[in-house]
Image (tube, rainbow, N blue to C red):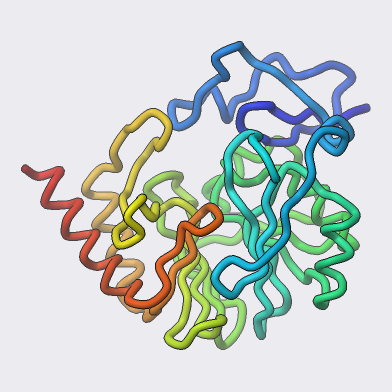
Length: 268
């Protein structure tokens, strides 16, 4: 039986003989059902019409769907002392991308920031021998394709190694997660926040939204909680959710400045 994939958000579902009646991810107010109605595809169909782009994104190996499909996130390959981490997932896995990552040392675990980027996470895990997938327990209910490889973590922090820590930011989703890496390709440490903190178009600031496509701002209380959870962590670079949407140098100051700017604006 096929594992159907939502054509709007890119989430892969458990195997069924017919497409699901609906996509709960898209019917949620943080996302949306496509203007032409709910549509479905499969991994095999995606392989026939799309390919993956693999290259450098400000010093990190990045992978993204080449062309328009679903949400435009890209995944990043992180060579850390916690193993080789695939940060975020896509809806498409190709042999070329898998071989390219294996040539770099493979993938030891997958970590995903929030449900909008789960994609075909189980396909990616199986491509590397069933490596574990780390998701926050608070977002367990959004998993549409359960699998034994999925490990749910709890609390506000999970230390994976001396240099890698997962931080529950909350806000966008209760379990929205950022990855803090004291290493990285640039001096000063790195933060990878998914879109709990969204790098905006000027790439000097960030914003904080409950729903990005539907323009629903994040409550000030959630932004203050996020600010408090991130306060102990130093970083000078930040990789956003899509290719090139990064702040390289001065990222800690940009985050602090953006917290203050946002909270002042929503209080005005």
